[in-house]
Length: 115
Picture 1 (tube, rainbow, N blue to C red):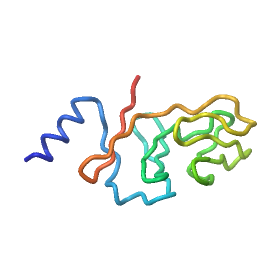
Picture 2 (spheres, rainbow, N blue to C red):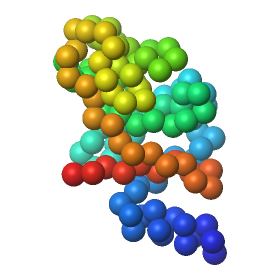
Picture 3 (cartoon, rainbow, N blue to C red):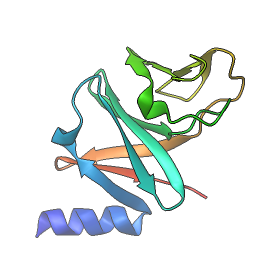
Picture 4 (cartoon, helix red, strand yellow):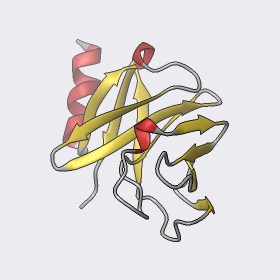
């Protein structure tokens, strides 16, 4: 009963269930679709982060890139983005990635897509 109440509270707050916590290990990433959004979710240093799943420089799915520490490399032109805040760390990209609010509760990962 308590879990259902917490889940309902998150949903009422605009959060969307993405996956169970054990579905994404340390240093791993996964791509999820939320409505029209492609979102990349990754776990780094025990925390879960969510950013745009498409490179801001040229259309490329970032899940096909590499994640090294907090640096997410685009597979197309090797731009590097900070997974924690979406900032560009290395070009050729010059626009940061959008970042989504993530919460992890009761072994579940939830994100909030704010319009």
